[in-house]
Amino acid sequence: MAPLIDMKIGVLALQGGFAEHICRLQTLGADAFEIRKQSDLAQPMDGLIIPGGESTVIGKLLKDLAIYDDLKKKIDSGLPVFGTCAGMILLAREIAGTKTACFGSIDIAVKRNAYGRQLGSFFTEAEMKGVGIVPMTFIRAPYIETMGAGVEVLSVVEGHIVAAREKNVLVTSFHPELTSDNRVHRYFLERIIKS
Ligand code: GLN
Image (cartoon, rainbow, N blue to C red; front, side, top):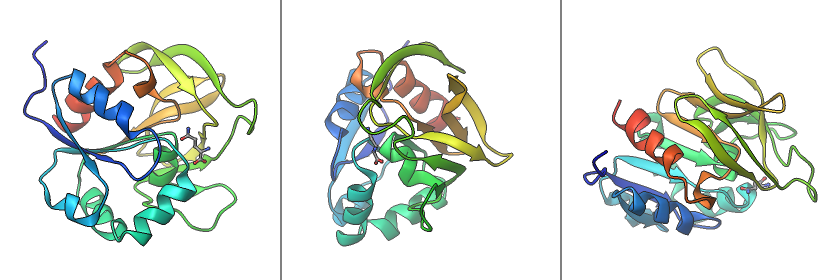
């Protein structure tokens, strides 16, 4: 398949695993750039990735650095966005045990550190709809507890929803950027952005 050379993807680079996402995107031939400050949002972009890390820290930095409002406007107006782990938490409509959400861009309620804090890291391989069997690394991951009718479930592991999509928003509990398998990123570029 031809490389996805014309795409420009912004990767939120305030904290967490942004470098690995950039690496995966570059391997696919996409043009990836870091979003660290408000002026970085002036560049045109075809899609956005919100990486894993610590959702409370990323959420605070988004506000402190005055990135939040502009980014929310872009997502609300249809910018394709892919959130992994903490990124999923930041995109969810509801975070269990809290009153506030961050972007609220996908109609899911998530549970943070859902597999426990200490023993919550594990690796498995499971089916992701539209992609196939993919390697999945979970690190103190959330899962989706409930969701609205417009959300499509893409993967279920041990009875818990770990990947989903609604319109322009794709989320995974796991970290596809931590393996050399590019298919989940390719899915984002081809099925969420190009569609
Ligand atoms: N436990 C983290 C949080 O709640 C997410 C972990 C991750 O992104 N790997 O934000």
